[in-house]
Length: 219
Image (cartoon, rainbow, N blue to C red):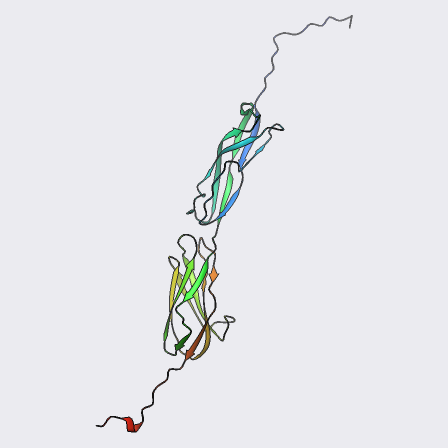
């Protein structure tokens, strides 16, 4: 080292640039009719220095409300908030959207208007009431089966429109015997299908009174 003279250079500078990171909204899912509330922590951050974090951000989606129909919606994210010991001035932040998926809501169906007994020639005024969130619309099927269970091919099947959660169908009974009745909601744009319980029905031949010749009124 005694053979050299070391001179410190002057005028040098170093540029420290912001570290690029991506803050992404986490994907979410909910059923139709439910409301999703974001806490602001549904996110992930990539490429941050070890030990440094994003505490929260502003997260929103047009699909978060209860009236949002079944489909996928974008989740937006912005305005990240630094975690403890983190200075976001050291980062260049890019934001990535997430996806909110709204799925069909479940329903329950109840069949009324069949009664336990009826006569040949009577008309069954059947009503299927479908319960679910929002206004339930779609199609329904009314079925009548031979025997004491709702199985096999129905002897009568009728389609009907469900509006406001209600469908109706009339059926004229043409034969006597033991039958079972059932109603099925086939599902709609925002609702899953459902089937009512199986209802027993005994169809009787109406009794016709016999009038003897002696009972005829005198002429």
